[in-house]
Every structure is written in C-alpha cells, then in structure tokens.
Amino acid sequence: MNHFIKNSLITLLLIYISHSAFASEIYRVEPPFWWTGMKNSELQIMFYGDKIADAELQFMYDGIELKKTVKVDNPNYLFVYLNISENAKAGEINFKFTENRKTFVYKYELRKREKMTGAQGFGTADVLYLIMPDRFANGDASNDVWDDEPINRNDQYARHGGDFAGISKHLDYLNDLGITTIWLNPVMENKMHHGNYQSYHGYAVTDFYKTEPRLGSNENYRFLIEEIHKKGMKTVMDMIYNHCGSLHWWMKDLPCKDWLNHQDGFVPTSHNSFAVADIHAPQSEIDAMTKGWFVESMPDMNQQNPLLADYLIQNSIWWIEYAQIDGIRHDTHTYADFDFLAEWCKRVHDEYPNFNIVGESWFTLPWWQRNSKVNQKQTNLKTIMDFDLMNACAETFTSETDTGYDLYKLYRVIAQDYLYADPDNILVFLDNHDLSRFVKKNETDLHRYKQALAFILTTRGIPQIYYGTEILMHGEKHEGDGLLRKDFPGGWANDKINAFTRNGRTDLQNEAWNYLQKLLQWRKKNKAICEGKLIHYTPDSNCYVYLRIKNDSKVLIIINGTNKEQTLQMNKYGEITENPKSGKEIISEQILDLTGTLNIPAKEAYIIELD
Image 1 (cartoon, rainbow, N blue to C red):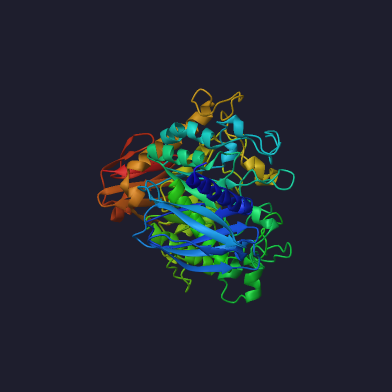
Image 2 (spheres, rainbow, N blue to C red):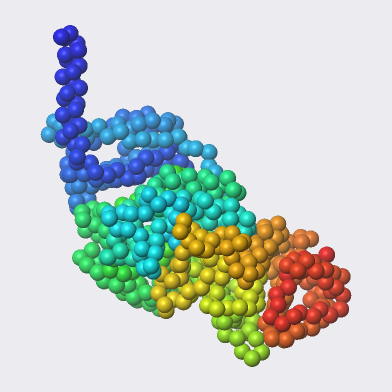
C-alpha cells in the first residue's frame, strides 16, 4: 500500500475514533444555526452533552470572536457567546472540543440572511383571524399519530388532527373572506400526552426550536407562511416565554439551580395581575404572581437568569428570521419578569423596526403599553389586548333589556382612551380561545351579531376575529374549553358538512358570512377606518354615533341599540361631518339623504361613507 495512502487512512481512522467518542455526547445545540448580517452582533449558543463543559473549546473563523464561555451548575451545558462582525461570511464554524486528548469538531452553520418577506408587523389596516391549528382542518393524515396516541375527535380535550397542510388548503377561503393576517395558537413542539396534559392547544412547549410534529415540520410551517405571503396576507406567531411544558427536554437535566422559579416543585401563581402594576404592592405579592407556576404541568421559567433571558430572546429572533413571521402574540405576558419583557421587546424591535408584539394582559391595560402615561417604567410593548372593550361588548350585546342594548357601556370604555399612550395599537375582539364564544346557541336573529361586528371593525384599534365566527360557531366556557375550540366543519375528509363552501352553510350562516365578508373587504380599502381619527358622541336615545376621518375620507357609524326605529337630527353632527347632503350605506348600498333627519331601524348599524 502506498505510504501516503496508508498514513491518510490512519489519520481518517483517528478522526473517526475521536468523532465517535463524542458523537453520542453532544445532544443539542441551540439555536441550531444563525445568520450573518444581523444588527445585533452577539450570539449565544447553548451546547448540551455529557460533561461538555469539561472540554476545551477552540475555533478560528474570520470575522467572529469569542466573547465568553459560561459554565453553569450542570457540566452538561456550555453557553458560548460570539461576536459576529459585519464582515463575517456565511459558512461553517468548526467548534473543536478537546478532552483527554480526544477531539470532536462540531460544524455550526452560519447562513447568509435572505431577503425579508416577513417582519412586516400588523396594525389598524389589518384584521387578525385567530386559528387553533388542531381544530381548523386536517390536510395531512400521516402526521395525526404520535407515540401511539391517536386522534379522537369525540374527546373535546384530545388531539383532533388539524395541521399546517389543512390551513394551507383554505387560504383562498380566508383571503376571499377579507382576512389580512392569520394568528395561529402555538405551533411549537408540544409532545405532551393527553393522559398527563391536554396539550392540543399548544401552550405547554417541549422544544422551542421545533414545531409540533402533529401539525407538521419546521419546513411545513415555513412553507405555509410563504403561501400566506403569496396571498398578500401576514402571519402572527403565538409565543410563550413565561413557562414551558413539564415534558420539555431539559426538565430531566436542568442547566442551573435557578433555571426555573420554585425549581424544587410546583408552587402555583396567585394569578393576581394587579399586583405587578400596583404601586402599593409588596415585593412578595409581585413574586407570588410572576414566580408561581401557571399550572402544575407548566413549570415557570426564571427570566431573571441572564442565560435563559438571552436564550428566549434569541429564540423569537430565530423564528422571525427563519420562518419570516410578521408579528408575535405573547401569551401570559403579565406573568413573566418585567425587566426581561421590556428587554425582549426592545431587542426584537431594534432588529425589526416594523415588527409588532401584542401582549396578553387581562387587566391594568394602559400600564402595559409602551410610553405609558401611568407607568414610569418602559415596557417597550407596542400593542395590548383590549379585554375591557371585549367585556363591554359581551355585556352590551348579550344583556338585552325591554328597550334594547345599553350602548353607553361601549362609549364609556372608548371615552377612557386618554389613559393609553397609543389607542390605535390596541387589539379589539369579541372573543377568543379562552372565552365563551360571542355567538350563542340557537340564535336565529343576526342583529346583535351584525351590530357587534360593525362596531368592532370600525372603532379604533386592530380587530381580531376568532375562527368560525363567520359561520356562527358557538360554545360556552362553563361547558369546557375544548368546546370553545370546535372543529371547523369541512376541515376533515369524512365531515358530512363543509362550511368552507356556500352550499355547505345554512341560509343563516351564509347571511352572517356575507355580512362579514362585505364589511372586511370594504374595510381594506377605506383609509378613514384603517388610519383615521375617531370622534364620538355620548349615546342619545341609545344611539351611538361616531365618525372616522382621514383627510377627505369620512365614515359615519350609527348604531341603534333600541327595539324601535329612532330618528336623528343630522345637523347635530354637522360640526364633524360638515353637513354632507348624502352618504352611501356600505352594507345595503343605499344612498341616504342626510340633510334633515335620518331614520335608523331598530337594532340596526349604519356604516355611511359621506359624500
């Protein structure tokens, strides 16, 4: 044998032996890859493997320097911080780990940034459509079963089989309806068994860098978003950085003694969101809220640990860059550490200036919005969810008296917008996956449905519609959360009814669907609604009148909450309408005479484009 060839084979054999010595010892590297050209040059890489911290780390790569390595309580983890200069090129970083004369080279991929199609953000011109992926449509039956756990559509808390492929098949339906942005309940891996946690909803994450396999792969998710963008729509990703699932991969071997709050065992949160904003609250009350576990199957992560904080912040940036999402809805926002949340929002917006994060807060809403007038600390959170207005809508359009609906409750909430730093960047909605559905069982009259939608889609803020609202899906929370999240009829191959089609809907459903579609499609093109100022009047004779105005574009909205026709003197509103002679009601397409009085039918909502 040629001496050179012999020596080469020996060298290759030694490399193979060294590689084999480590091959089973490095289990995870997160994030799995990164990009050049990021505004923030710092990158944290978490290596996880058998006593990986005992190995010596070396590498050489033009344009990249090692800032620091951090060893923690558990030697199976090593946190490596790099500085990636603007001159660094895409390629592979060869991380050389050496221990006891054994060497393993881990090739870490550094990618070139693609042209951004995502990170567009969302705002008042958008309408979000909230989907629970497991319950919308099953487009790929091959991913239904995991670990011998089949789907069971007869169990409201089991997996039903909805997935990315099912959503993709119905993008034309959503586009035709008039939706601009699709918000999916969590899609990250939730490998939780039905027996130990009802994880079909996705809020118990077991891997922050993978999608739930019963929904589809990372590549399937990325493809879905590409298809959404091609349709001219956007995507909002639901994220949870307050807690993880009890079966998360790191739970069997946690990195640090303080990776979790109450790491020794379950201590429930107080759920007292008021404590975080309460200027009189002792620290113990704040800690009881932010450091307790949401439920026993959701361990509470300690974002005050700087390593975990960096890990979570990078995770969101990784998903924005990889999947090209346009926005984030952050679950249980008020339950996490305040300083972490402020830093997270800042770093995301520094990297993607147009991006939008909406945080879930049920109480003390103005306190949480960035540049708050009532909070001396900066939250950096652009958008909050308007639970106050949601509650007012639920009370107004459900608690009917002999005279009709009390629209003053809506007025009262809007009249307190002086508390907000930015009243336009508030998510407005009638219901969602945590609430009883707005539509009630056996409704045969659509007046409350139409009035509520007319209001929510023409008032200030960013509207959100819960999937199935357009076909009058109903469900009460006291009957079980799973019944708030029913399967969309027609999303499964064996469904007898297909509500995605006109022929598959009842006459009443088509009336509801047509109303919403007309309103949504019109809304897209109207600048007064999408960008305009709101001016409103105190309800008179239980008629709520308000104007949306943007330059020459003006829309007058009149909602009659009573059970009888009301006659309005139109000159009362001349100071804001400038006394137009006529206007077009956009639903009926009637041309209305506005020079004298205007009759508003009982329980009617008029949306009038002014001439």
